[in-house]
Length: 482
Image 1 (cartoon, rainbow, N blue to C red):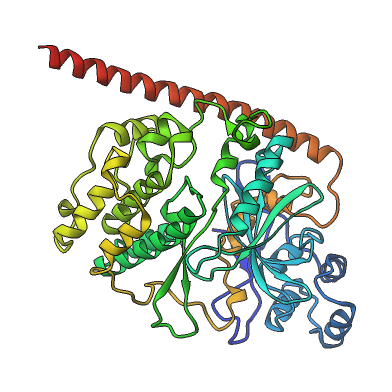
Image 2 (cartoon, rainbow, N blue to C red):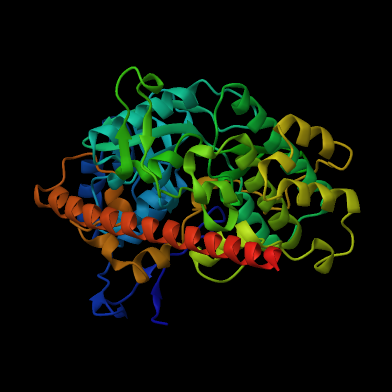
């Protein structure tokens, strides 16, 4: 590993270095990573970024350290809490845009996925910390998709419950559609299990019970999530007490249907109330946690489909693995329809038989054999649920210094494209100045091709699943005739 250029830190910054490669050494492929900008450029970029008010910038100039090292300036601004580490690293990389989106100041990158990018942000006047979910452009590349987005978001906004991530706003800025959501300061259940291992029985039961309570509120409004999985269940720590029990928050309500937005077709006005439907052969959800009926017909999905996915999630919390690990997406879908997962007592011997029976009932192939409502499930889990502190490392005294995204050296060494002004990387997801004209066309072309390939893959998956099910039915009939 090449030597790193560092700057001595105060006790506040100890252990959280701002690091850049000392030389433009090659890291991956043929791309090189440049040095951080010099002091003068860093200050110019900071002024252009509008991260500080004129008063704050003037105050900072009066207190700047004399060192010509731009890393020293970055540490100074982070220590004064004028910048977050995320912001400082990108200023060092030469960025001076992309820090503002509407009324919000981007503080950190929290994650990314098929739906887009999630950033930690702060309202510039209210100072409220929120999560901004900036949707991937290909999800909303048609008027029908945008209509669906607005409809789903309006429905989501009506869902107010302690176990559901609250939606505050939805907006568009320079072609970027984004949701303003409640900020949850803990991990999702996928992160928690992958780091800590399977959960205790009582805690797993409590988290599933809380999720069921949130789903019951959605069920009362006629809503179906369609993509319940560990990574969509976040754990919010309650208050400042480290021993306080965690509060589950369901995220991404209303967004699962956007995954098939390219397949949308609108029914005529007067039929189904002008409901926007998806074409047949569209599979939405995550293969590891998808109910059998969703692979056959998206429109058959109801709250019991969410309960099947919750059962798969319950299995994951108790065993540390999904019900059908390994194999391709097609193989997983077929196994959900035709096989039973390995018994939980094959992984651990402390799960009561009644709890194992709850998991099995949730994962019945037929919706009629599952729990018929989330409330029924919550009541069944109540005797076994034991709330407790989330087994996760608490945030340090200055949470702005810890990014949920990869560490700083990864941002530069692993993904040097972050330094390219016209790249389509994470940082290009938000900009506070219009991008060059060539960028949208390039992104649009790529997205349309990706969308086309995704459509073909979905049709192929669905066709293979149907073929497998039909073959199984024929074999069963032949055996019965004998």
